[in-house]
Image (cartoon, rainbow, N blue to C red; front, side):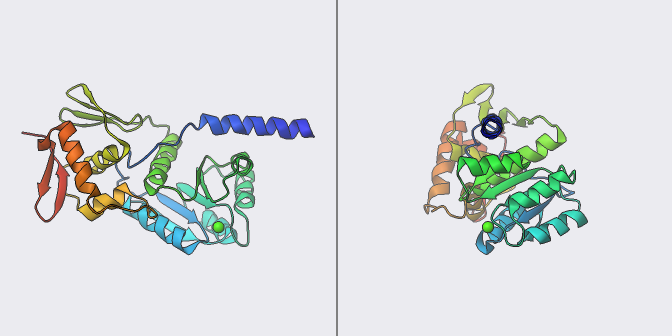
Length: 256
Ligand code: CA
């Protein structure tokens, strides 16, 4: 009996390892265009639930939110979701129990577990029960969005696309940027800012919108942070790449 538990643990640890380090940051890919992907958020904490729902709606997802395991199971039975975001500590039916029931009944939806339980054994239980990925609270909203995109992509069997604008090329999966073939080294925040601007080149984003993209809800934002990162990006890419529309915001444009 001990051996069996031990082996299961090892296997899960390997699986956990194979998931790799979490992407340090960000808006790695453009938000999904229509039709929107539909996500079910299962979370009983009102503040976390509201924060995640709002953030993911801003990313372009349709997000339904239920607060207990029984409501979640009913919702999954009634609606065509693309992905589940699952808290583990839930009223009425625990997250692990819910996940086990879904997998036992043949449900293969991607499941991203969000939990405050951060011991290795809890993670292993979640993965053994059929979770596809794991985030420990408190987490960065941009990292959450990136992991959702990765799971949805994996589900569709797609490789990560390169994003190109003129001479500028961005590899979202590797966080690599080249300009006319020359590598540009960016910090995680600079990369996040560039990714946000790349989502819709030519469309100005306000400082508040950029702050939202760059920071999680539990992070302190320094008042001039966006300007600092804009300045750094201009220095590295060339000032003409990032334009300012006075009173509106910043946008990315290929230099003429
Ligand atoms: Ca909870």
